[in-house]
Length: 94
Image 1 (spheres, helix red, strand yellow):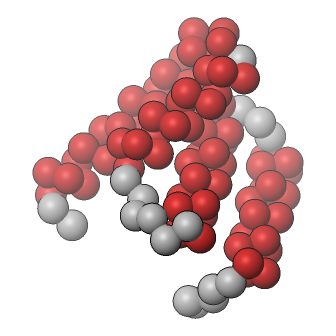
Image 2: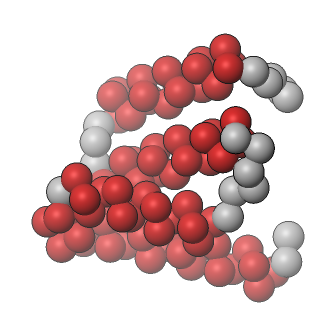
Image 3: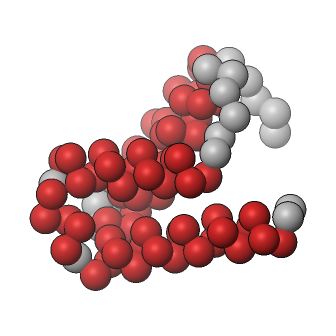
């Protein structure tokens, strides 16, 4: 929709947090939400979004908040599947 500006970024953040609240704070949902927030922040700062960096930031923040989350299978599978999608995108070259 090419909606720009702080107002629309705020609307996107509120919608994202509402979605996470409704769905629940499972590790894959939290990882996706953290990645979305980082992408929105990068866009507002005029910086490119780099998939591996965003994934690393999301994993790092989640592990800082709850170090035991790294031992859960859902976190591991979510992280690895997202890393695989990022790698596949780079191989395909889209």
